[in-house]
Image 1: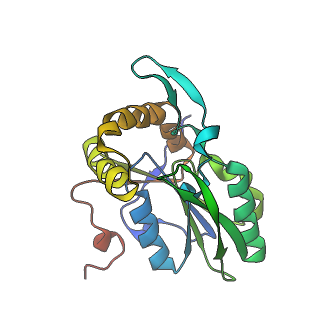
Image 2: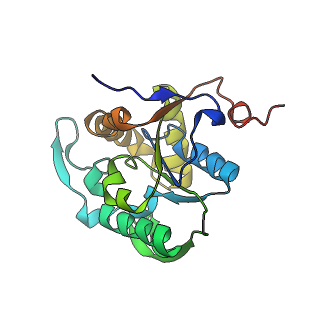
Image 3: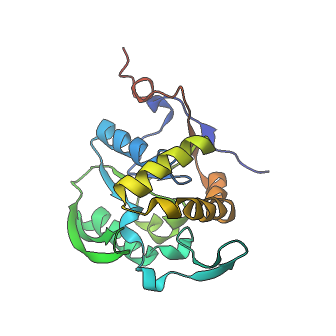
Length: 216
């Protein structure tokens, strides 16, 4: 029987854990939710955005509309081995060096230190955090997996702001970018929902204040 993740609407729905994995489609609200979750638990946050491989190493596939195209939405676009090693070092040693990635240059530009205090929780967010669990599950004594979803039109609007204003991508390539984002979602990203423990729906009426009991 296919197991479906439980739908959550308040922080009380989430069990306590050492590691929280927050996955979901692009611009679904993963980063905002992860930041709020980390603030609630006084946790550290690690983003998979640090782990993109250099543009020269991205897989190229033929697309019927755009021809030869880099597959930035593929799981192979991420350095999973380094991600796993960094998480192991955080959980076992309390510190590590994580990559710094430039979305303008599309390559790794250095490293930066990250620390995790004893007993501090770790929130890991990104497209493939649930899929990446295999690289570090042996080092965490408890893991909760959350899949975040939002309406497609909401995600498209958010992605436009993020890619152009925050990541410096040219506006004229946005439509092509969304084509591959949505293709990648169907091929790889949405498959993680079945392996999640919980699902969070972020819609027009969703309130973080309500979710985290701050509206009293």
